[in-house]
Image 1: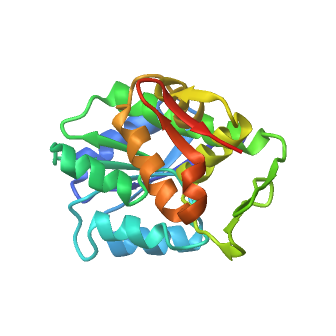
Image 2: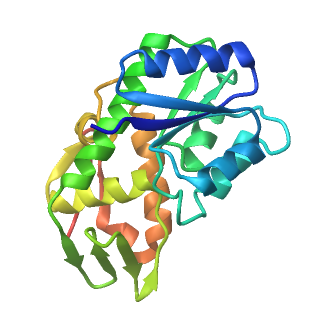
Image 3: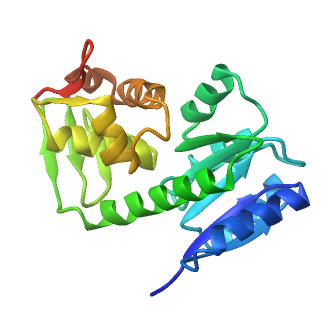
Length: 229
């Protein structure tokens, strides 16, 4: 079985080595290290990895800019990104999520927790690839989940991998209330390792990109979200 490829973008040698050891010790993944933002962009261009662990404070090109650029590129838009940084404020976490990061881990970090998050993201990505084809066509929104194509009023919409999977799961459960915990489990791939705030941030971004069709995602106070047909 082919091993998952993880790209570690970290300019601190000791931390990068620790992450690489953490990722590779299970034997089901191989990790590559680059120590600057421009090197990360080049590495992804040569061969997109299965997952990226991205520090924010990088030389040449910041981690924030790297994330922004990758989420605008067709070859990297759906690659899972875990941001790794010493910044601990809620605003920093939300900013990372709004840029399109899938997860956010602060330094100092627990190698065990980081490993769990990496495995969960990789597992979720693999499961998403196995889901049956689904096509939704509404008044404004057309989503072909097999072709990874979403449009609103005939205009193509660019979604990150997480936004795409979130929309797919909500559409698959249309007209039913889905709790934040359920979304964490089924879309994020793990339970309670990430804050429910992450769900709210991603739903907000998804609504914004969908424009008029965003109104089809209802907030059910105290319960979660519902996609209405």
